Length: 67
Figure 1 (tube, rainbow, N blue to C red):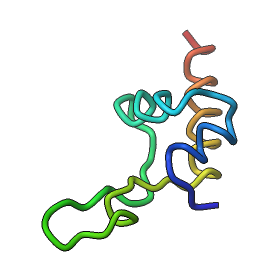
Figure 2 (cartoon, rainbow, N blue to C red):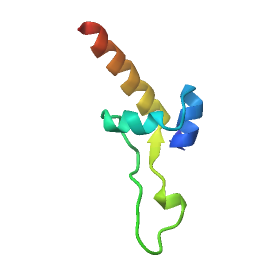
Figure 3 (cartoon, one colour):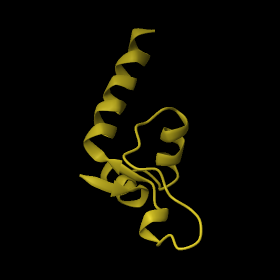
Figure 4 (cartoon, rainbow, N blue to C red):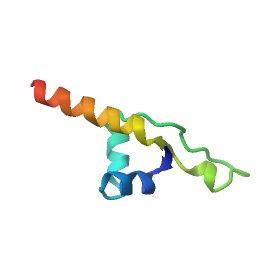
């Protein structure tokens, strides 16, 4: 499901700031936000594929356990 960071946070039971942290850690982004004159509010949102984030979180957890 394609969602914004607020919806993603709700799906995973975290605060809306956590997806920003995930992006800085390498989480996949479905669509980066656009900026500039004439860009609508919806286009200014970063979007995520919740299934891709789930897979990324699983892989990240597996990698941490390998250490």
